Length: 308
Ligand SMILES: Nc1ncnc2c1ncn2[C@@H]1O[C@H](COP(=O)(O)OP(=O)(O)O)[C@@H](O)[C@H]1O
Ligand SMILES: [Mg+2]
Image (tube, rainbow, N blue to C red; front, side):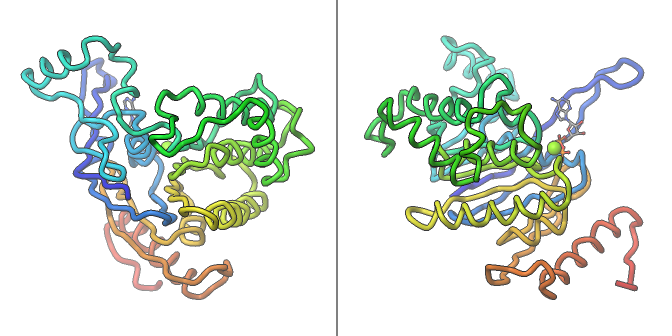
């Protein structure tokens, strides 16, 4: 279970007059996400979705609030008062402040993240990309029997990498470089790499935004199929998907969390209980989409559109 408690994130930015100014990216977001659910964070661009997702992943420290995954703290908030700063420095005096990631006590491989761009290393072939992820997982000092993660033997790594490439229909392109793959294939590779470490949670930041509409629909269905197949055996994977595409959010999710236009706060939480497999034209899905679009329209016009 993922629990976010009153997460806020403030940035200081330089305005056009050259003065420092505070910017609130995320404001007081509290959220509980049960295991095995697909949850979308939906909102207009700039509303703090990526920032919130990176805080969930432990890639950024929140200014305030805490994230717990299965009861374990992901990353503590940044020190706000002088007293906190002193305590913080003392506690982490041997660690570079840049290595914020090591502060969390959550094993890395429990979470996999897929980004919109630069999702894969361009200097590695498809196979090398997946092998790299598995090697990283092996190198994690916490990947001992204790955390339930078994170290993989050398020969097994490549076999496993090929298995996951096969899962996303990329086995024939195993020795190609990302530049030789189409956008859709690259995102499938990112998906294979994320799944290969057998994470409990996959965080996706607009994973399908850069591909054309037809490919996007195919990738969405592929994601659902893979989650079904890989999650079917063991514990189901929890997916948190950031998107600005209302249709995508409603079609894929068990729950859509609608963010308000910046600063990011939760505007509404909409459960989608339509049974899977779903039809994109399912009237219930369409109705939810329209409700969300009307909400966004209201945010823009500050008045309700009664024609919908
Ligand atoms: N490192 C940063 N420094 C200053 N401002 C930032 C930084 N990262 C994001 N922001 C600002 O925070 C807001 C939210 O950004 P982001 O989380 O990327 O939004 P979204 O993913 O919803 O488009 C934006 O106004 C953005 O300019
Ligand atoms: Mg973003």
